[in-house]
Length: 139
Image (cartoon, rainbow, N blue to C red; front, side, top):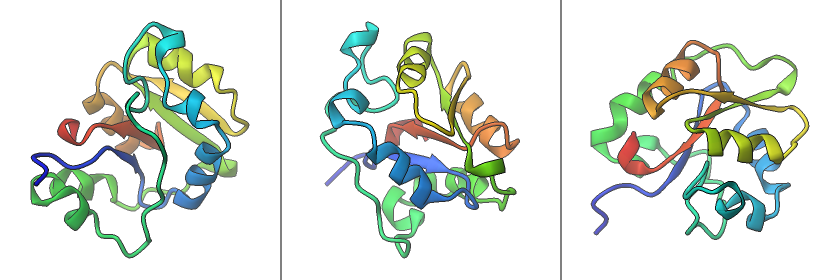
């Protein structure tokens, strides 16, 4: 049994998760999951990741992330208005992660820097960011 949930991409409840998934799938896995070119490890996504999987809409975060993480996830699902013009504001937590995010040059995706996962979650709740990739133990 897992002691912590799998890695997850977290977004606002009203964010277009299909659009976020489509944008991320445009990036070659070798660019999305590798941090070596940026002098870091596990930037934006785990370097050990091999693919991005979209969970079915019926997948409940309570079941996926377990009870311990449900309250944090519930706060992120608090019905914020959609991002303007379909733009995705991705939150990063280090200089190297910001560099990687910027280098991806994805149309309609902008990278926003924060100092920690907690600050990114606050930015998501204040509608200053739309999504962040986190390790299950960081939620």
